[in-house]
Length: 328
Image 1 (cartoon, rainbow, N blue to C red):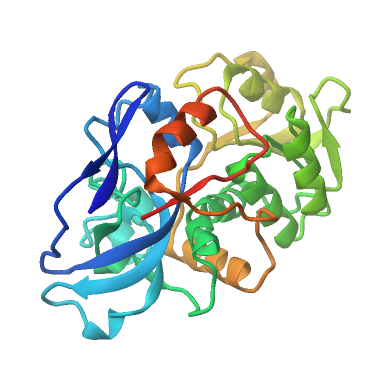
Image 2: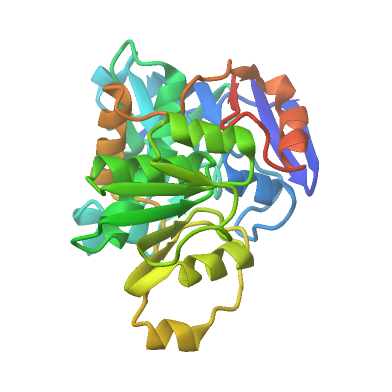
């Protein structure tokens, strides 16, 4: 079978690799659509220490169950599924309550083990979330990034938030923006310097949009930074009301300074959020399946052979395409 293999910084190849066979408790998925995530671009450039080459990336994907291992119900065969790529130990308190994102032993499909940028991939049964039979596989691949937005708002937004700003209108930023809207926040503003992405955010429901924070009035209840650069984290704090909350979900820079005297004197809350719970994942799936959330027009799924060029293009900076999909 074919697989897109990351070999090192700025280096990917499309290789013939052996077909995976399921172990006990696993299923084999034919990957129909896998989205390229911003964190994977960082990995491709060699900036993510949790990814070690050679690696088949791809943690945002959906497809069809084609084979099951011992202990997995055969009723899964032929079902179409979105994949929750977080694999917890299945034994700890966090896993028991559906918060596998907090499991101390968690690992991610497409990060620690081969992922969806291949014709087929094996995943544990507990990673399978059935999607409606007629649901577009590209929407199925969007469940994972949207679940991040669901979690960011559920965990980060204190009660009574009346206005929110989301910095960044990539896939995660749009996910956070739509989660804020669907959770009833009255006014949601987007900051995005890329004009096509800013326009898309407005079409998807943002109440206002700005190319930068320079012309914005300060005094916001909630700011979600979906970029994670030093400048955007600083901006997030600068925009806050007294006692406002900044939610950091973007992963661009590992370390960055903050004006801590301003944070302390302003009684600000700084909240980091990572991934999502099983309930967040189900909520994202429901919103996408029902048409209440999305990213607008979906680009055609590219063959794996186009993967090296797609990564090289995205590594140069944001493009008009909010999400690029690959399929086996």
